[in-house]
Length: 256
Length: 315
Ligand SMILES: Cc1cc2nc3c(=O)[nH]c(=O)nc-3n(C[C@H](O)[C@H](O)[C@H](O)COP(=O)(O)OP(=O)(O)OC[C@H]3O[C@@H](n4cnc5c(N)ncnc54)[C@H](O)[C@@H]3O)c2cc1C
Image 1: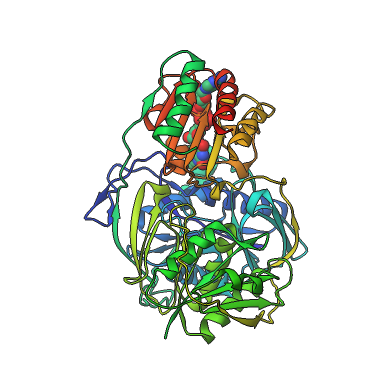
Image 2: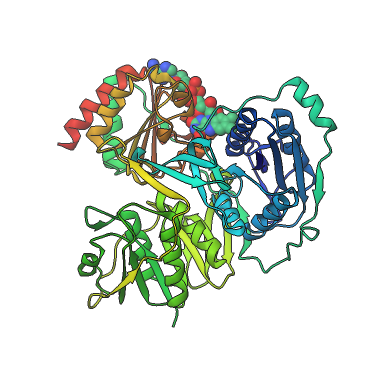
């Protein structure tokens, strides 16, 4: 199988962030990681490869030079090839989807394309579905269970109140992964060594003939939300503290 | 004349609160509003939509949500009616449907907005798991917004006349992403993303059975039950209950965190709650720096006391 995984580099989830110039995240001192949902996509891709002899897993990212790091991690986990669409521009999702589609096609016909359901930086949650539309493929995102047999993907997604949709799609298709799908592995030491030697295929968006369209979204500003003042700890014997808490919730906070 | 289209979801024949919030926003905007519903009995909504000129009632889409058919139907509706703006609640449904529609019509789409200005066509949305806020201007021919529940007012001004109901046939396209079955979740459970009150448990709950304690407290408050990732990973709770960076982002008026330490990845998922209460036996737990009210103590003692006290207060 010709398996693709789209991944994105994001700041570590522990990081506290600040803004420079009114619309950019200050990058100095930040640690970068693969967006957590992309790890579920990667793990699913690698498991598929392990099940189907002769398969390849190509990891693709669109981003600046530093994003090479997530491709190395993907290779160390078990991806067999990597493509970096290198750009410093802020692309909107239509353009990113176009870059990813062109990068996939540069490697041949896909059987399945996986991605995280959402990158935890822009938090838009649209990319898998945009990519599918650009490539004219069926897609499901927010997938928590998946089984691929005989050219058919059977997946499940969770909707409201814990209800689940069971979905069937013919391959090739696009799948947006979420937590619950699997437990991502850690890269092995040997994997890390091997990953260093892999040559990553590089393109610019222009080389992939992705025209620079008028962006659909313009980022005007980024800001740090106001933090509310720390509250108070209610002292006293448990029964008294609880009584006081309920009074405060009712009379002061007015939320009961 | 351009129109703002509101995609509404219903439950028991009524427009859901989060959808009413989207409708109220659209009605406050500069252009006339049309509502679209895929509900079978959707034409009946007209009576409650005074002030809205048009209600598009989609028929023939089948009784379960088929993403490709719904998306193509909305695409047609947008193209045929010169619609420039579409709004909806940020829900499980719109999270799936709106990106599909946006990709088809090459629209600008801002998901999970906490502020929208329909005159200037810009929106504010939390990014980086809410660590930052982005102000985004939409710049496409058609633009879509989904609104975070419980942020926008839901009061709909009284208007004149009821809408004209326009029947729309569902698009005749194949369902390539085919939903073959919808397995129901546990009955009567409050959905976290729209819940007004949430009681959440962390590793401090110690096991799955003890979550019943939180459910009892939740029942008194008509609340949803959430969990930290530690509780989910230890299989005390299901993933659909996880609140935080890699779980649900919730926005209730009251969030009660029991046996949760307050890690940043949890906090970003619930920090916009109007009031946060923390119950934790460790006075140094970071959650106390973030909570409006805290009680230092054993949750197994505090939670039953709280339940009893609330029962008294609420009756
Ligand atoms: C990429 C990534 C994504 C993540 N995403 C999420 C996410 O979405 N959501 C999330 O929640 N976490 C997330 N985490 C995990 C997060 O970092 C914390 O590990 C997690 O939130 C801790 O859960 P906890 O507070 O239940 O457990 P702990 O940190 O172990 O805290 C348990 C607390 O319970 C208290 N306690 C114990 N017994 C009692 C008792 N009897 N009475 C009262 N208090 C008691 C303890 O004092 C302690 O403060 C993520 C981490 C990473 C790296």
